[in-house]
Length: 424
Image 1 (cartoon, rainbow, N blue to C red):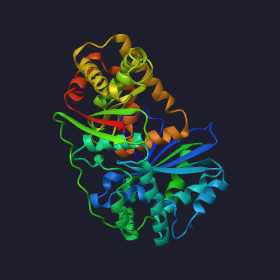
Image 2: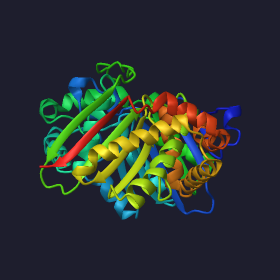
Image 3: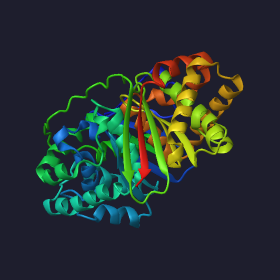
Image 4: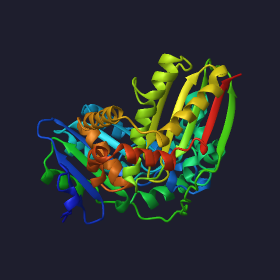
């Protein structure tokens, strides 16, 4: 038996939300015009769930899930998905892991049980664990050859002093070498449980069929374990400017990365405000810093801004690619323009352009079954489902005065982190 959760906040949501008897959440939206179904399973088992000494186990487990279960042989899942014309993949962040499958609606009844089985009953074979660990270790080593990844990870380590967001999702090489299959099985059986999961089914499947399939496929969970819990420490406000400089071989241009900490998902209005400010500063051809630093003064090869909404302590960044001799000058200009956001009125035409860009971007991000499944799963995992539909309304009501207040509170030119990458 399932219960359809009545909720006034979800009245306009085109998806329906169900809770199965075992506690698993099912979100479903029927798109009758598409012959495709997307199944996206979200688990509250990202890197933030790891004890510090278990660093990298969540991402490593993402790899090992595809190594089968007692009922699904190694390679069998991939064979079934490919031979029915589908595609499957996965991703891990600090806040979640998710596993998604896209297939024709005529094959979802055949393929969904395979996805559920490897997720719920992952066997994590000893020999596959050793083999796949080499793959993960190579992924870590390769990341250190990517200056942009290295710069971003250094920025996180510089910006976050207490929160687990400072740790790499990929993990630490020395710690990974100490991990065992039993440790991973413990992590899996602790976190891959129904109350931590959201299954999203979007596409050419009706609600009755979706509920029936979910009930059948997601019924047999592994016996629970209890791995050590890692308390999440709140990140204190920055005091002053934190700097870090790296000199790297084989890079032709320098990088300047600047970061500020915003609130988590609990304050969506401020998060939307910071998203808008990132667009005003460095989001697209008409943004302030792109126009001034790239087009007019030609001090940078490129520059962009981004706001990453997270469960806790969200991240606001500006990244510039430039010649080393311009680093100090560009950083000073960026600080001046950040100061202006809080101290000078925003033009209505600029506010209107920003709202139009973000509203259109939201519309474009809800066009396909995969995009819808991703949005529903993401918000229901780190917050609540209704927040994904409130995003456009929040954008529309934000005023220029509100953006000034947000900039004043969170984007200080005297409190931020700066990372510089220079060619050797």
